[in-house]
Length: 110
Length: 113
Image (tube, rainbow over all chains, first blue to last red; front, side):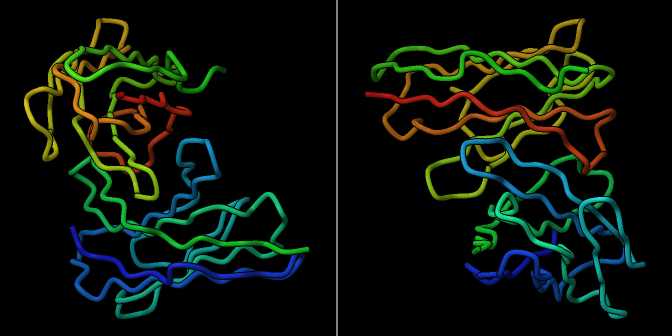
């Protein structure tokens, strides 16, 4: 599985968009980009995933660059409850296991 | 619809003891994976069970073993506990083995004294 690089921490004002970057320059053609988040004292929560195209769901949007070497998770209107550690994971569809890095700690401030 | 449930939520053991952690997957899911999360670190994959067999294993010693039952629930067993086994143990379930969309439980916090 390709290695990912994320900033260790970020701040965001409540109500503003939170843009979380992830670099995955060694990604292979069959590898997906997954995003999870972990709120304190809870298990990780799936947010979104994509292969090539941009994706959007009720939680967030995922923007993947054309060369697929990086991506951005966008939380359109961050709330205090979005304060969490966000993990960007690259994995192929046939492994079934996730390799978590250190993630980005997002602090949403009032 | 109950999500992934784990028991117990907290556990205290002493070095050398054995421990069993339990997990019930989300309704309709047939695959269970276990992860270990040390304080301040991301979760680390231990192993995955499907059709009552271990399908994949991470870099963990044989002291870590598991089981999956016909109803898809699972147990994680750790023998000869070490201080370094203190961690949050997370169970995740999915439909199928090659799926990256996992549903996690809240974990069992194990403290080894």
